[in-house]
Image (cartoon, rainbow, N blue to C red; front, side, top):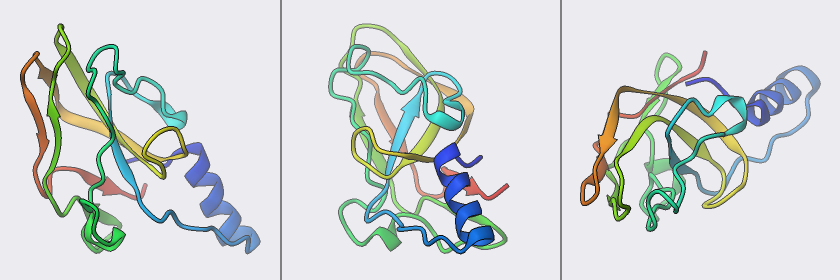
Length: 138
């Protein structure tokens, strides 16, 4: 998953200029209907899915439990995340996911394409099973 502008700048500042980066206390996963790019566009809206909210991959436990320990620059979600039932009136095609440092708004950290994209119909339940969301440092 590519880094966002925010995360990329923070890494460069830390590695090249010695400027400390304050890591997030918690992270949240979002769903997107098109490529969010490095700024976080196209997140699912509550107009499309009224009960949609970003999900905490650690499920309220310590942040270290949400993703696996990185190995060869790769980490995966460690727990099942349930976004709940689609309670809108139209299908939503989810093509990307992203990780943020806030439940709402905040800074996007990284993002990536879902393979394959998911079409969610009204009444579908959106679940991301463990090890299905892969984050790779490019």
